[in-house]
Figure 1 (spheres, rainbow, N blue to C red):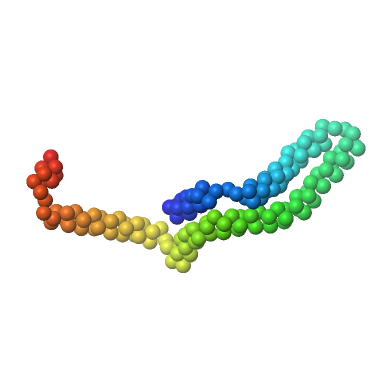
Figure 2: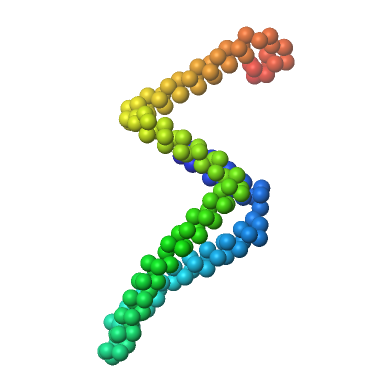
Length: 160
């Protein structure tokens, strides 16, 4: 979880530092328009279905079926250009904002897990080993501090 948090934090920091330029805004507006179009299709389906189920007129039912089929074809045809545009925009943003470097962090983590394939017991042992190493480092630091000469003022602060 920490690796994802780090990568997300760096991504946001890079966008804040580098700013959001006019080409970024243009691409975002273009993608937002396409996204709104894709999100409006289910609403149109719902309206066509409501009209189809409530009407008795055969002509209106045929129009609803044509709308339904047309929206299905539109979704299939428009999805590929939208996906290509979104992928190009995301890649450009990652390169421009130097974010692509930080994507390596979660990928390294998943590669590590894929290669070692640890069990729950292995992960627990690794966690306990980390706690033990930190405790040993802390104890060694305390031991070093205790062996240093202490002035009278410092001694009174330590005792009080």
